[in-house]
Length: 303
Image (cartoon, rainbow, N blue to C red; front, side, top):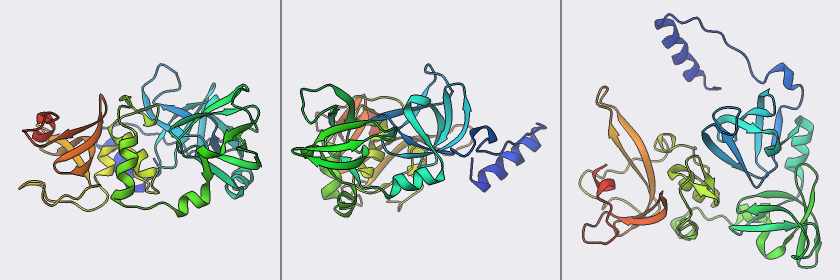
């Protein structure tokens, strides 16, 4: 952790438990000066352990910055921009020092605006693909080549993407409208995408990964987990129904811990209005709190 309060509480717990603690400061000295990385795949997986069979903790999109904390074989312990920490294999990230990452931040970048497409080795869709790209990916813009944008990956690979699928990153940021009118179509665009535990991309989503990417694509950065997302924004009273809710509000579901009595958040969705909500549950779908509707979600209403 890099949170002082979390460290303090952990140390207090260890002291009470009669556990001998040992703290290692990160980044590790073995990393050297290359303590930053830029994600080098369309979607890089971050796992709980340095092995491909380990649980998927989260995902990070191409062009995102991570901090390198330490290494283990072909894996790096990374801290993502949302402060999530996990293990990423070396194919997923291109390491840089401070100067390199500063230069990356200064270049003219483009962002992919279509859910899924390919980048090609030539300005021709019949040429060999260099890589897939997904919505939210960021690449270095080099030049315009007819109906294609010539781009560069963090590791230096050159590719071409059709102009209709990309936009200047700064222009894209300036056009983000943080309102339901923007959130709604982005959420609906992901209908049917399968549920994947740890997923935060168009390739697969868990419940909080869905809300995170929907808001991220509209210029709003949410924490990674539902239990973290519930701590931001303003609480809306739903004890007497849903009249106080506005379309675009986040809905949180959960239960009380039987031993402690504390509420535990287990799910999150986006409210659409008219008692309907969109969420990742099996797949991205729309359900309702209205008992007369065919998409009524009784289990969600109870939690």
